[in-house]
Image (cartoon, rainbow, N blue to C red; front, side, top):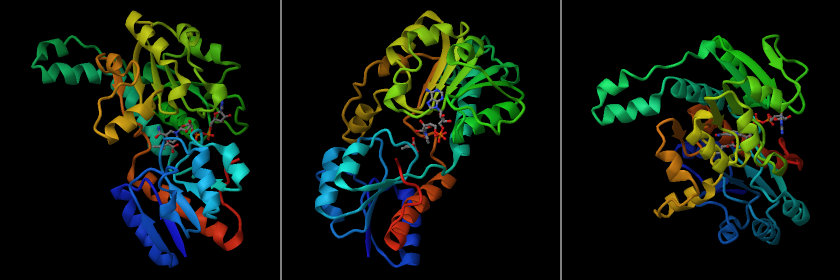
Length: 330
Ligand code: NAD
Ligand code: COI
């Protein structure tokens, strides 16, 4: 019995190996992302475990079908980069790991809010330039004084909301399908414009499906109070980056922390091949001292890594044993 894992990072290897030994399967590991050109490596496998933000294309699923590999078990939450119609057409079953550590992302969001409020990027730059007197002029804000707008109150949004609440902030929320079990401190509003009009900090926690493309566009950003802070750890397509840059330039937006970037695929490919980053607006944003850009790392904790590997392989093993995925992606 053989399983092939793509996009493997060094910190995942001990977990992959441990599970392979315990369950007596042969494990093929590669750091390469899964593409139509390297599916052949998985020939004879009962399933593929993969991890990447680059697209899983129709050609990948066609090759998997040709090789009779029945399962693609991704090691993460987001499914926006999967061509699910093709997977379905080719008869490939797809699973994800829907909950591996919401706290990892929620804590990163609050960290981002604190960094922006205390002007951490500007402080770091000035200290590095020996402009210590200038640092004394930077006055921070306090999280306990802020009204936070949480867009999407699923696994991660709810935990981010709770963490903000624990800091003493007021927390408003908008979700297309509000929870029925919401805590009493969480204030749902009826629609997105109402949320935006009151939020000094807005944080996104909705999926990157097509319907959510540019949820925060120029109009939405203009609804926020002047100087509001924007945090995106969800998916890059949720923000119109050109509109964000314009709003940062006028001061309508006071700062932004972007972990998931609209054009992140170009950045990933470029950094992988040591080529220059040419993603639109990236260098403009990088030059701003009230912007934090991170390369999609909000999830990256020890707990998350372990759970991602275990969750993905559990889907493949369960499919092999019972012809059923634990976390099928619809
Ligand atoms: P989830 O499915 O648990 O919750 C999503 C919520 O969004 C649901 O309650 C849904 O009703 C709501 N929603 C969908 N569209 C909406 C809209 N237009 N307006 C209002 N509400 C809407 O998802 P999750 O696990 O909490 O993940 C949230 C986001 O975080 C996803 O985009 C996911 O891909 C991303 N993510 C990022 C990282 C990272 O490292 N940066 C890690 C994991 C997940
Ligand atoms: C997810 O789990 O969906 C993430 O965004 C993490 C990622 C690096 C793929």
